[in-house]
Amino acid sequence: MIRLKDIAIDAGVSVMTVSKALRDEPDISDATKKRIRSIADRAGYVPNNSARSLRTQRSHQFGLIISALSNPMYTRTFMAIEEQSHQMGYEIIVAQTLNNPDREAACIRRMLARQVDGLFIRPVYRQDANAPIYDELKKTNIPTVILGHRSLFCSNFTNVETDDFSAAKDLTKHLLELGHRKIACFTGPIFAPWAQERYEGYRVALQENKIEIDEKLIFQSGSTIEEGATAALQFIQEETNATAIIASNDLVAFGAGNTLIDQGIKIPEDISLAGFGNVLTAQYFRVPLTTVRQPKYRRGLAAFDSMLKLIAEESPQRKRLPAELAIRKSTGHPKR
Image 1 (cartoon, rainbow, N blue to C red):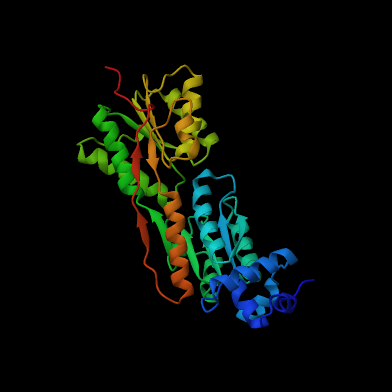
Image 2: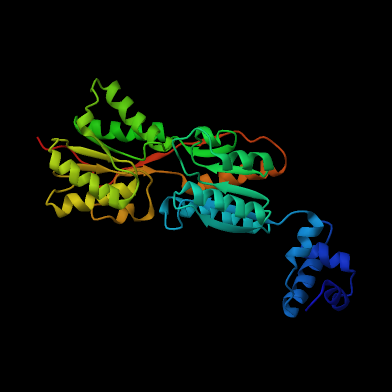
């Protein structure tokens, strides 16, 4: 096994100089760093992270807990966090909750057992105002950044979220400007604050245009493709005469859109359809999807910035990022 001492002998410098060069310390010249790194690479030197952790009292690892690795809403957010972590010499440990509170608690405890230096968490939203695992987490003082909206049980932590209210309001106004007056809303999970915000944006946009909320146009759709398909079948069966649908997210819009098209309903000729999130496949859907372009990569950068402030024992403010519309072919004027 190659040691720092071996590299120091080969380079003709002290062990301390080798250590500083490999850590990219500023008091070592670039030429010396380059020469030492070249020797270390040729020798196949691999740093001992366990020894470094004992010396620095840091694991140089961050934990990232999200709903599912297959969730496209968090791919670019994860990319941003991983890229920033890599530049700082940190590794990312990833876990998925599958939207199960018990599994979420287990994931958090395992991360704490690994002694990670910080946690990024997309919480599992629930009806209860309290969640014991978040009380435990708060007592540890581990720097923690919530990815998304805070609920009562995680309100003591800093977070990064999208201004879903304004985005949903703008999306509804877009349909109103096209001439739609009967707009159905496929709402997300009841206890999720992001779903509540999106519904509220829809409601306020209608209210400002003197249109009363019609409960027959509100469908509980959850957040998955399968739930979107189920909601669309119910929508068709109930014959609401709506001319447009706003889905809680793009996955719900995909499920609803596939069902509508398979039933012979044309988009947007017979009904306009809009999603939320702008996942990568939105523009390649069977009819390119009008949606809200969430700042997913910027969300990751903002979350990492908050983490750095927490590690430095500062108090970062809640970050609320604006979103913008991506208008495509799935929305158009209603039939006369």
